[in-house]
Image (cartoon, rainbow, N blue to C red; front, side, top):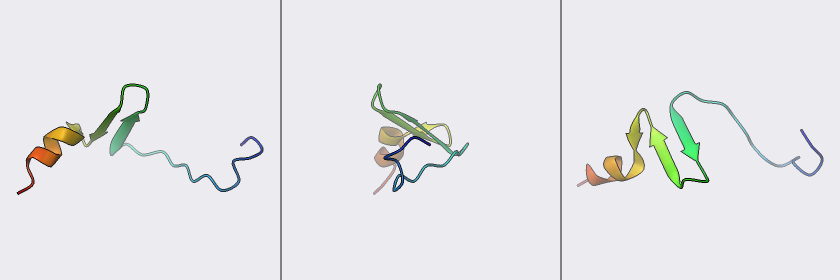
Length: 40
C-alpha cells in the first residue's frame, strides 16, 4: 500500500459490491434501495 494509507481498512468480499462512481451498493445481488424497501 502507498504511504498515507496506514489507517485505511480494506477487504475483498463476494457478498457485496460498491460502485462509488455510480453511487450503487449491491448486497448478495440486491440493490440497497430494494433491500430497504423490504423493511417494515
